[in-house]
Length: 126
Image 1 (tube, rainbow, N blue to C red):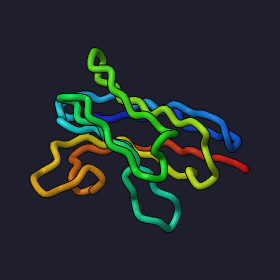
Image 2: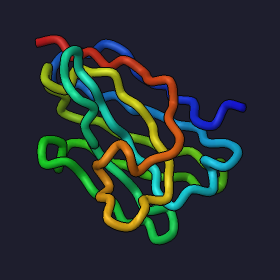
Image 3: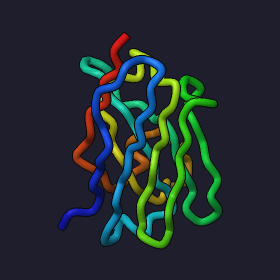
Image 4: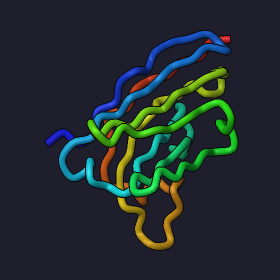
């Protein structure tokens, strides 16, 4: 049963914009938190942004603050990541995640999430 499906990745030049989408279904759609992570080759998976679906609170990694915006459309259970002013260092595979963040887990901890999408590639050229 497919739970999270990402779309919207691609290749852009530095300074450009992309919008990623993540459609949630099943149990993932009722999760309290949804987030975007990214992983570059040879690096660990890192949290980019997260949203608390109950109240709309959002959280961002320092590296993307002011450039990326996470949002959710509750009507169709879709989470978006609007990425502006993209930099070559933003190049990575981007993953959507959903979960309920067990006590003691911060939003940027991959183990806190139960459901993961298949990933969508973002490539930023200089």
